[in-house]
Figure (cartoon, rainbow, N blue to C red):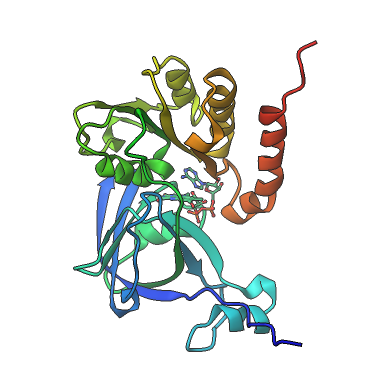
Length: 283
Ligand SMILES: Cc1cc2nc3c(=O)[nH]c(=O)nc-3n(C[C@H](O)[C@H](O)[C@H](O)COP(=O)(O)OP(=O)(O)OC[C@H]3O[C@@H](n4cnc5c(N)ncnc54)[C@H](O)[C@@H]3O)c2cc1C
């Protein structure tokens, strides 16, 4: 019998923090660099993401760091914990990878890590993955998200052709959390302020009230899973946006760590599909 090829292990890279910048009260930018980024590429999509690896407390992994070996030799609870972050920018010439982190308090791994990050700190990551870039042939673009999707929305807006038409609706906590994003003249960017309301409430109302321009839309909708589900229902069932023109997913779930969210994400998505793609006929 032919020998089975060994399962290809994801290659982890190590990068160093070259500078940080507090963009707004709730967003910190971390720029990574170093030899570990040799050969990295993230140009195809505007929602490219990497998976940061945070080692289990008290565990020392063998060098050279090898995820396949760790998965073989260490019990699952000692594997590094992953956190997914968008590639806000990749500058191949300078070999610099920019990641914007929501600062959401003291809970969690990645947000607090970024808030504390100092020049010279190192971090390992897997990736990139990705799947969306605005289709230049679309009649118009719709981009909707909370702060966690802002890096991907901003990267997407920067990629739009000069004659693009569209609406970007971005929810942040307060006016101080708005960022400057360069957009073509036909694209409206609307900042919505949560101001104590539930996450996504303002976004849902704004999309429901939006006058959709005519023609084929290409949509990107991401953020907290609860409002993303409500928006998906609206876009699929009321606005009849075709599935293949909709990049939509819950990036995080209120009250759940990322590993708790990932543990239920598949069931959640299946339930959303059942409810929204095959809704029971009205009595
Ligand atoms: C493809 C993809 C791309 C992403 N890109 C980015 C990105 O560029 N920037 C970014 O900041 N996030 C991004 N996210 C979301 C990020 O992965 C999650 O927010 C993650 O849970 C943060 O990890 P943590 O260790 O800080 O908090 P966790 O340990 O996961 O959670 C701790 C607590 O904080 C809450 N929490 C987590 N995220 C937020 C938030 N954004 N706002 C308020 N409360 C929160 C949780 O519900 C939980 O109660 C992306 C997610 C995906 C799937």
